[in-house]
Image (cartoon, rainbow, N blue to C red; front, side, top):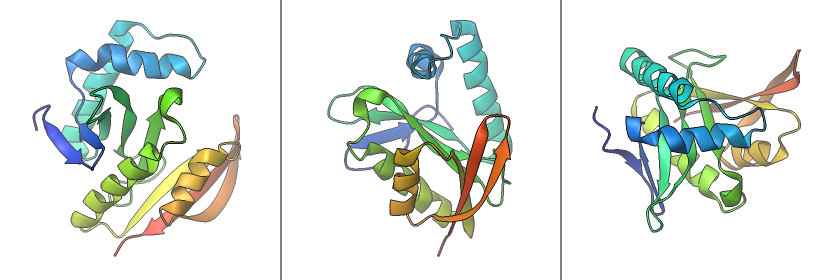
Length: 163
C-alpha cells in the first residue's frame, strides 16, 4: 500500500503512516505525559507499524480532518492482547479534539473495514479509569467481557461481534 487514503468518513481521512508524520506522532505521544520521544524513536515506531501491517494486514491509521487538513490522532486494528483473526481496535486522539465525535467516527470506519474482511469479532482493552474511551466503545456496540489487573491497574476487556 502507498501512503494514500485507506479509509474515509464525512469528516476524516485515515491512511498509513509516512516518514513525514514523525512530528505528528511525536506530539501525540508527548501528550501522554511520559516525556517526548526522539524523532528517531518515532521513525522506528512508524517503520515497525508498517512492517506489522505488511505482515498481518492490520494497521493503525493516521487520522486527518478533511476540512482543516490537520492531524488529530490514530485509529486502527492491532494484535495487541488479541489475535490477527480477532484483533483489537485502538485509537488515540489529541486532547484538543476530544469530545467532538472523531473517535467514534474513525472507529466506526475501522469496524466497517474489519467486517468487510470477514472477521467475526473485535476486542478492545481500556484502562478502567478511561471513561471517555469506554463510552465510545459502548456507543459502537462493544460489551464488557471481563476485567484483569496488571502492574498499571485494572484493564477492561470489551468485545463486539461483527455481522
